[in-house]
Length: 61
Image (cartoon, rainbow, N blue to C red; front, side, top):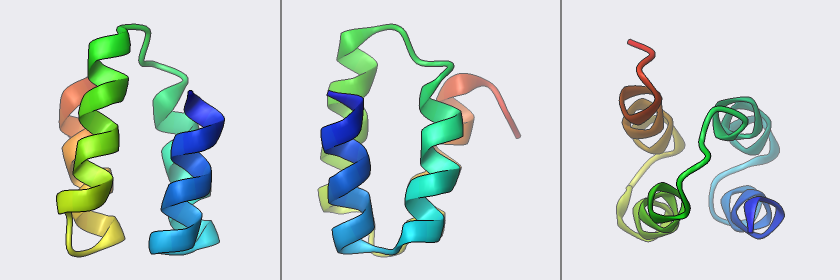
């Protein structure tokens, strides 16, 4: 599922955002959280907004 999310992020935002997300997703083990990230890919207007949400989810400020 992670590879699919990263591909979607690269298509919607850019490769830099996908790379940053990849390192954050290494900390995510709950499938429900991965589903949440998938929803955020659709809802977020910017890649930075997406990364901020995921950082908060994994406990990085």
